[in-house]
Amino acid sequence: MSNFNSSPTPNDQAAGLRRIMAKPKPRIVSVLSASSTQAKPCLITNLAASMVAQGNEVLVMHASEHASEHHYELGQSHTLLDVISDKHTLAQAIKSTSHGFSSVKLMHKNSVAKASENHTNSQLNLMFKQLAQQYDMVLVDTMLNSANVLPLHKLNESEIIIQLSRKPESITEAYSLIKQVCSELGRRSFGIIVEDSTDAQAQIVFGNIAQVAKRFMQIELEFFGAIPADSHISRASKLGRSVIDAFPLAIASTALKQIAQRLDYKHDNIFNNKQAQLS
Image 1 (tube, rainbow, N blue to C red):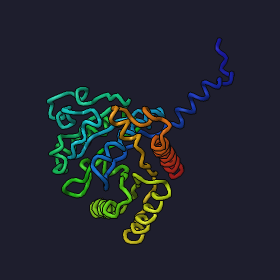
Image 2 (image 1 turned 120 degrees about the vertical axis):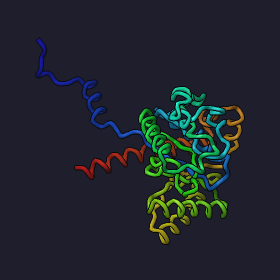
Image 3 (image 1 turned 90 degrees about the vertical axis):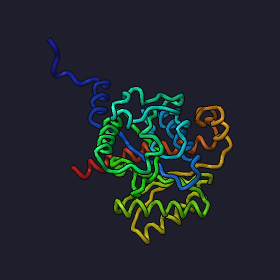
Image 4 (image 1 turned 135 degrees about the vertical axis):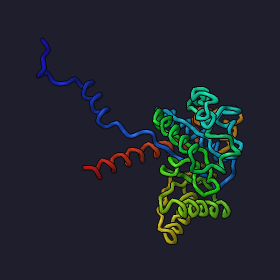
């Protein structure tokens, strides 16, 4: 006869705790660039690889008109738009990359800027939401469309990180992106990553743009980290590998790991804050 009064084993307790504390997923982060168009796919590829190394299931979605598909090993891949048009299956559209993350293309690049809220876009939004549920993290290489918003409603509801450099024109472009999005979607927060800089240099850049955003738009920005100038990044790219894989001790690898950890840490905070509001 079973002993119903027996205490649960530590393994049972741990399994129960994991179920109770299961965090919402996925976390969807769209990345906009106020820097060079080649810097963004390099950041996303390396950040996705860092997230995979930390035990996350990661999807990268290409949703931009810039020709960076090869960074995500997509090439002439089928798109989610092809899938809802019944031209191909979802399995044919999703690619498993050599970096450990999966990748998919939203639509062909010449259609992204003209994407609008219509029946097709609604179907794409639904498919993306269902697909994203299969992953812990979704990183989106994207851009604003002709309406100054992101190409899917789900992306506009989710987090946005802006990548910029210390150059004055990049800072100006980052502020312009913030203004454009907020003019259509209302006040919201943004994450900031500063490339080619030390942490101290990046903090100065962030402090300046955060002060202006707060003063003139009452918008809060969040500093996610700095990516230092490091030749190991380009060397790893030439090898077809992520920098954390090829050169794990490089300063860029350390910085990317810290940003990836910050994404996980913030995810925990978002979940805990929501739970506190409900209690």
